[in-house]
Length: 271
Image (tube, rainbow, N blue to C red; front, side, top):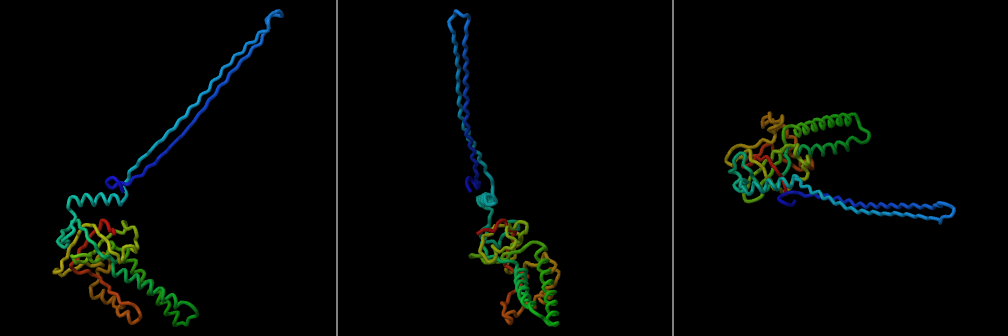
């Protein structure tokens, strides 16, 4: 990026041409006026040659903005005006520009369900091989139905509403962050490049919940599961408790992020 955030492309076109023309004319005349006259000979000649060389060079310079250069230009403008809050972020108001560093991860509910679904599908695939008894076939059909319901739930949670990333701040000021992202603006819908990494986040604060406020941000607020009570959700995910007894790691199905927490609509997530 050069010249105040611009990216530059240059096209050079060169044309060389050369032309040559030649012309040669001649005429001769032999005549005998009378038998007693001398022999007369007349010769005429004309010649010409033209040569023309031409060289043409055209240079086209095009300046365009890329997403990166636009972001750099916008960030510099906001930073020079001093409107980006970089400290005391929990004192931010709705609509303030904020900049902080955070370790990000996917929505814990969706991430855990996707992991268990992949694991169960792999495990059930091994049990379907070879000859089976009637009971084994019945169990296989039941497992297949469970997987279908599992997959339907995941698709519904991923397709409804916006996508949330959860993070913890890195630095002196400790707080949690919930980034609400529109799927249409994601370069990588799987979020594999962002999950479990430390990134800088520039965005606009839309909600601030301090530690002494007995509130939180519901990660299922824009899904159909938001209509369920906490007791119903706890019972729904109780089947995933004590997974260490079956050789799996225990995970927490966190459906709500308690304060202190900052909810942000990100403009850019960058390293």
